[in-house]
Image (cartoon, rainbow, N blue to C red; front, side, top):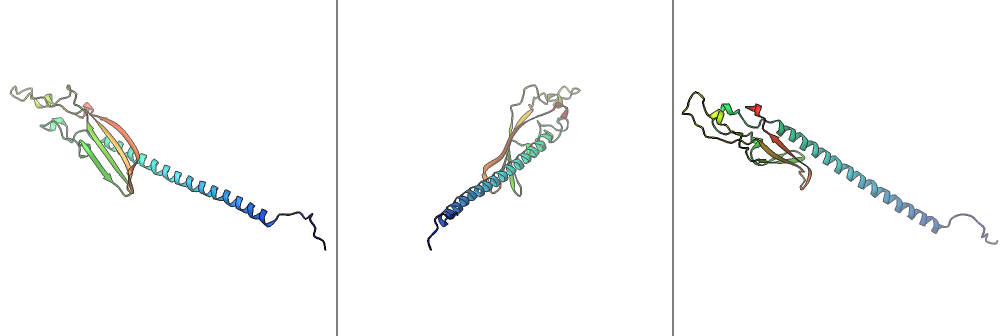
Length: 165
């Protein structure tokens, strides 16, 4: 018997090379899917953090500027606890919300003289006590497991409305 060299087909080496090329391509697609899932998760966490920051901004914006109206007090006002000057923190199950309050410089025309002076009593005090009329609030949201990475950040300005008198 003579060997027939006209046979059509693939050799074992050709099949192994084809399988190797297919495996490399399949691994690349798998790595791309894993990366896409990680980006989707990261994007979801960032969206959730921004929603928390926005909700907290609305909460702070909705608080009354002062604890009581100027007519009910003798001093220049007490701010709500969450609106006190400085740093604040609220740690939740998954996220930490931090906010910093900076009271802006009082504007000279906003003072309590009209509430401290009794028009019927000329001996009443005429001391001017200036009030803060705006504050800048910076809000940052971190994931509890990675506090070095800020997921969401925003800044708002809260303005005291004169009708709060």
